[in-house]
Image (cartoon, rainbow, N blue to C red; front, side, top):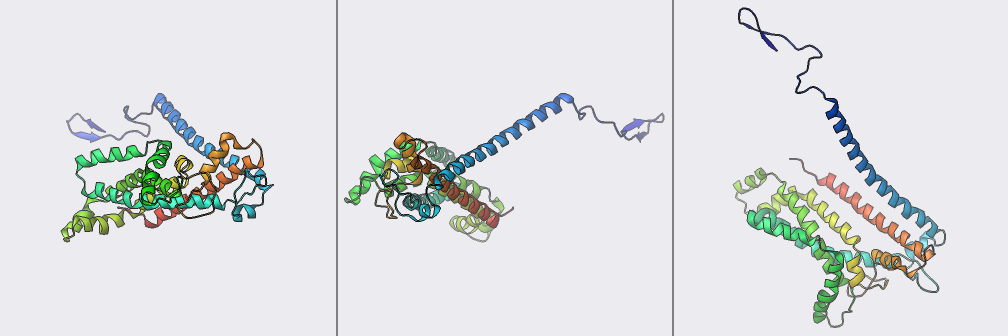
Length: 319
């Protein structure tokens, strides 16, 4: 702080230990508002945590009741899933095979197309084109999956039957292709965001060395954004594994132990939908089986998320 003495010269007078500018002084009302906002944010975080804990509690508690009547070994190794038969058998392998097969078909469609779209939007598209294409692409992610299911059943599968007349009306191939179309927005949008986050200086350095735009995209930008791109792939896989209505409508509801995509099959999520509609009485072993199936699906998704976390840490680049 400066003061002028009698001679007109300025002297420095330090603030006292408790002297604070009025503009920066603490105000009780402002502190109260900030405290309330902090508590609201903390409450929102606790809601998500408690919701997750509640879901896990329901799945585990009901699954324990199921495994009191069905051995875990037979659940994991039996190749028959017939809970509606007079002599029911509860082998998860047919549902697991259907889930993994449809997911594999979906990823074969989504990963190449999603990555190509992301590279084009990030490195080649003009800003005006990007502003039009990306919103339309993300709009695909907002279409209800039941609509995709009927699109697979009424359009995609009949088109496949023109090429393969012996193809069944319900099959994992048609359902998987449409699943791949449904998850393209997730893969392409996240991958494009990761590539656009790469500093422009890396691109300019590549151009200065004589590289083309295509070479820069594949040899500089893609490796630099690899952690984000792999995260997009992991999200797409999780989305495909948990898909319900597309496979329930187009893949059939037959729990066949097969990995042939040309045949009908049932996935874990589709079976949960079937039983939840009231095919089995509440509290029966068959009804409790949906919780064991749901627990299996949750563990699969958890494993994928853990893999994604490890991959992000392994390939993450800081700029």
